Image (tube, rainbow, N blue to C red; front, top):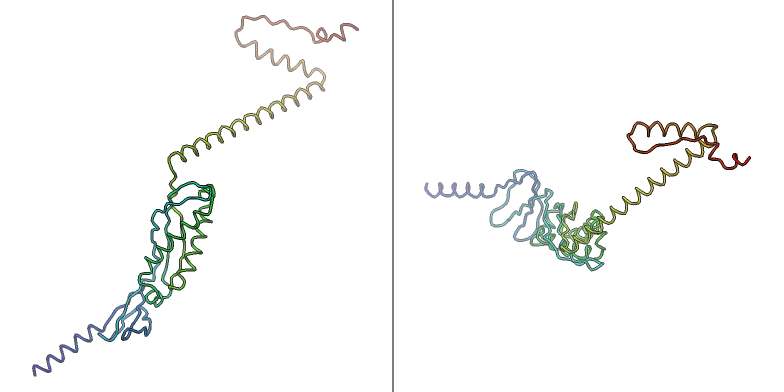
Length: 246
């Protein structure tokens, strides 16, 4: 009787040990006597104890940080660059069978790709074309990780740190560029103003009495301001030497 009770207890333990739950965001890779025999979908699954082993793989999108890398740009400027990689396991079996740690392996390969790509562009392109640099890194890493059943969804270059003296030089360059633009805008404004005055003068000269009216308007503006000077207004005919001679 006691033996029967022990057998029942052992059977219950074996049944409980064989029950596995695969979550919705996981896939279960089953090895039977060490050999791959299938991938289990989410739900309640049975695995034969001792004979079978099930390894669960998270198939959600996973972000991994690419540590700061010291690189030398194509125009010989030192910089420290880091990035983030978003990956997803699309083939759970390959992720288990083809690499010991697919997250670590992807991180290491992304570091190498970051150094290679960032080192082959000029500093200006690295700063201004981050999306293009990120896309190049993604394509390189994605080709390598495809054999591991990993899909690289995106790569984003984040921080680009430059030496202090380089930052100062860039700040001076930006300031000089702003001053240059201000001078150009000011000169363009003066040019437009001069052209407008010339056009107005030409138009007034064509209208009979136009200059006299403009002169009176100017005198009206001057008269409201206190001044120690005496202004004598002469007829325009007196200022015209040709009319006097005639």
